[in-house]
Image (cartoon, rainbow, N blue to C red; front, top):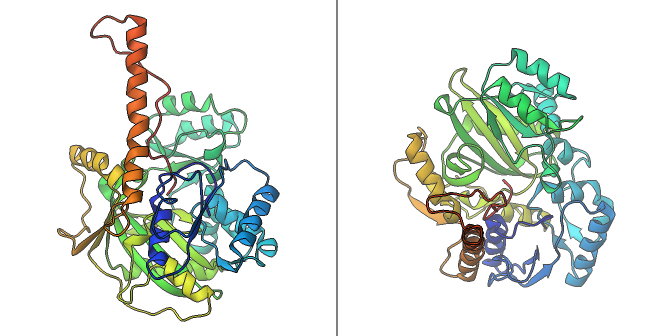
Length: 416
């Protein structure tokens, strides 16, 4: 299940392939019939349902129940974004007749998906996280700017605002008080942002944890890895990552989940700060992460397979994770590779060579999603260049003049 318009979502394709290859009938909510997920050979049925994330929850629940009745038997429900995870948790009673999903405290996923809620939980349970401020007004931002050490990071307070009118387009580094105050003038009386300590990339490493926890918050599958590249650089979704064993990080994640009592799949982003030797929790995604196929144990279990086995009353085979395995997202790793090479940044814990590599889109046994991705990824860029050419030609601009088109689209827009 997904809410919102992001058709180039490799995580959904990964889930369809992961279970579909084992003979599990797979169904998906898609933006239209021509998304990569909708054209996977392992998809039994696509349900085109364009949503924005601004619909009333009752409307979304009723639409989901209609799909469940059309499928005709209990189905394991896998959310691919925060909105879907929160909707499922807060409407468990209505959905439990048609779907199987981990039962957790109804309000917990919303708190975890919120920057403020996550920061409060980290503080409450002694989990390291970057220092943060939550301004309620422009005056609060002025006070912060007067004593803060720059640069700082600005993020939207709630994950859900990306479907509406976010204050910033994503994780944004701000290098001076003057720049922060200039940005804040456009945020209105209620800024809706978190002002966070900047952890310099020269002194930090990005780590990820994926796991599945049962109703007692016991991990049935637990994986750790290091993020090598992301797009946008150092602040966006994973473009390249390796599996790296990290027992300390696994213990930290397991203890935190036990303390808060969460059940289900998690996707955590942490940054290791070499200045104080601590892992600091940046993001908690209470759902399947787009790069979950990076991780699989020796028994062939990933977090999606673990959830399916557990919710259908079967045991989850144990095994060591495949250390050295690499994952690449083709459409975003190429620009990420170029950006990281220019900056000279490297990840110390990344293996020199991968023992094997899994691509997010290209698979020999399921080629249509890859070629569909290419068409949908390239077309907006070509269209934008054509529009720029027409504008330039129609305006009669002299040779050498460059015009800025403010309507630039972001190919492959999605969530991490």
